[in-house]
Structure formats: C-alpha cells, structure tokens
Length: 378
Image (cartoon, rainbow, N blue to C red; front, side, top):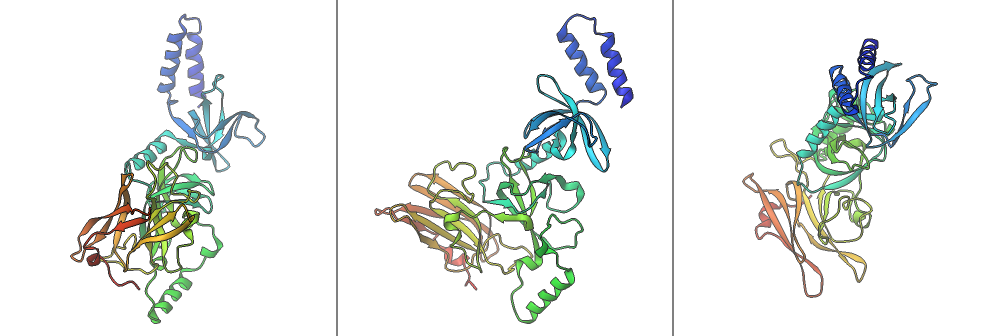
C-alpha cells in the first residue's frame, strides 16, 4: 500500500507543471487503473459515514446515502471487521474509510442483476417482509459463498418464485428466532409420533422454504436474491387476509381489477379490489418427488357499493399446480392463467375467463375440462 501511494505521488509530482488539465485528469485515471484502484462500490445502508480512519476514535468526513457510488482504493481488516478506503463522488472527492458491511461491490452487484434477469417479464406472485435481519443470497443454500449481503430487519420485497429444499443440518441458519431453536432429535420424535397416529406428513417437517425476491431500489441497490423462508412473513393484503383458514394459507395473489398495476400493489397496504388467489394446504403431497406450489384457487371480488367481498369462484377440490400465476387482458376482457397437472402427468396452461355481468358482479368461467384436474380435497 505504501509503495502504491508513493508511486502515485511521484508520478503526479513529476507532471504537476505540465499544462492541460484534461490531459492531467486522463493521466491520473490511467495511473489509478494501473495500480488496481478501479473497483467501485454502492452504499447499501440507509446512511453511513466515511471516516478519517478505521480506528474507534476516528472522525467523520462525509455522510453517504443508499445508492451512492464510491471508488474503492484499498482494503484492510481491523479486529475482524473489513474496511474499504474509498473516494466519494462529491465535489471535494472526499477520501476515507467505510465499513464493508455498509457497501456492496460492483462484482457482487452484477451477480444480483444477472439473477434479476432470470425473472424479467414475470409478474410478482406475492409480497413479504423480513422478521429479522437475514442474508440475501445468490442461491438457495446456506454456504458462505452464496451471501450477497445482510438485508436489514423489516425490509420489504416482492416474491417472484420459491423453492422447497429438503431439510438438512446446517450450522449457519439465517434465523435467530427462539421458537426455531429445537434439537433435531426432538423434531424427529414429533414427526415419528405423527406418523404413528396416521397424520399426513407436513411440508414444514420435510422442507425449508426459500424465496426468490425482487427488491425496490429504495430498499436495496441489489435488485434480487434468495431469502431463507423462516425469516419471511408473507404480506397478504389486509382486506383479504381473513379469508385464510388454518388448513389453507394464501401463497400467491394478483389484482384482477386494475390496469398496469403499479409495483408493490401485491403488498399488505394494497387498496381494496378483486383478487385471484392461490392457496396451499399444509400436507406434503409430492408426485414423483415434486411438491405442488399450490393446490387451491379462489377469486375474491369486491363490491364497491356494499364495500364487501364475495367469492366469485373457488375450486371444488384440490388441484396440483406450479407457478407463475399470470393475469392477462384489459378492461372487461380479463383472464388468469395457471399451470395444472393433468391426469396423464403433463403440465398444462389453463385459462380462466373473468367478466362482469349486467349487475356489475364478477363472474369466472373456468376451463371446460377443469374437473379432470381436480381431486377430492381433504
């Protein structure tokens, strides 16, 4: 590091008398690249301080905000904490030290952006919020190499997809909840007792849930990542959440009565309206080792005159479906599409037409062969 600084000072000093500021700026940039000073970072904390040093008694030089770009000049570790020496993009080009946990490097940010490209054009399926701070990861596993950075508690996001991962013993779980700290022996004993009583095996006993999420720039510069499901609380819109029951929870929902629904409209604070909702019972029901994403469909319509909800459609039995849910069309010509498993094992896109009758009531016309895709619910 000292050699780098000496080299820069020497080169700049030797050219200080040369005319042409533009040429000098270009020369400085080329020197920076030559000595490895071209890395950049983006601030992920809501606010953070660039400091005079990484010492405890260091002074603050400049406050930076989420989304601000910084040039990384050097890196060090002090008392097991990583620090970056950075240069800000303010008028004074302030240089100082910032704690690594407050920024995300360009390399890591690019990985998150590539992950976001995987669901480009897919509508958000649901919304969620973190119960506690949790690692945002590049993949749905607990290995240290997958960590992008730690997302703060109460962070909100849109859920694009999810995955059931067989439970396994892991030393690094993104979960500090006391009610989750039970030994594997105790848990296994409960599972075996349930089997002896003839109860169906439950999803939560077999799998850990992982969510692939999309983050708003106001929450995180990194647009996408995976979150461990135990830390995620689904944000079912308040006005329809009470339609859930203990044996069937909502897992995905989309508006049926809005044009060009704005980002974030699937969240808890969404205004009253008509919704198509996918639900899931707690029992494990794999076919060829694969679990369905949902096993029920319901359309909840809002009567704006009575200011109340009514059920416009509900599957009479269980279905076996996979994501994503899509709402298509405009105005009075709407439909939604889901993928259902046919009796022969093929996954088929099925379209449900949505119209309003003369009285303004919402009506749903299901596929003519829907009965073939349903089984008797338990």
